[in-house]
Amino acid sequence: MHLPSFIWLWKIAAWSMGLSILAYLLLAVTGFWMWRVRNYQDVPDFLLLNWATPRLWRSLHYTMGISMVSLVLLLLAIGIVGTFGHFGSLGHSSHLWAGLIVVGLVLISAFSATQISHRRPWARPLHISLNIVLFFGFTWVSLTGWSVVQKYLP
Image (cartoon, rainbow, N blue to C red; front, side):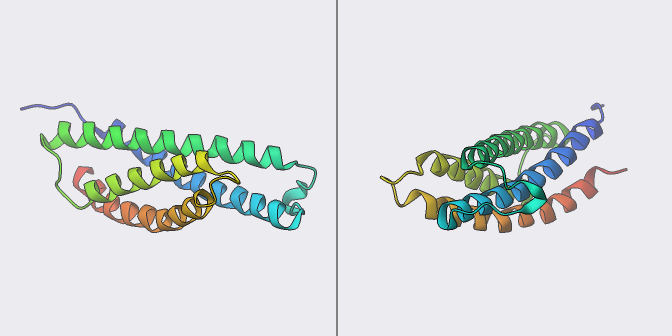
């Protein structure tokens, strides 16, 4: 059977993964800034942004979070469509499980972020813990993804 090349799909996936990792890093930085403002009432002087209000940090953090969730869901769709289209089935490597775990962690982290308030003291520690675990998830999915990419390169 002659299938079209899926290389364009993998290029989108590579960009999406890179941007997801960038979003994750920016979320870590803005999360640290929000923590510092909340605990010390002091905004870091990083890049001369000491004029920014806590509302701006929160807004930037939420925007980056929504972007990361969107990129991870795009990666899930690309992975399913591309793998199914190329191989005719799923589950050819541990990358599927790594990806599903990362998607789950991202979605639960995003949900926990919407629950953070003074009335729900469990939400912030859960959100932070999930994001620490997500670091290892992104590492795992990146390493297994590299082995998958080798199957598709000519």
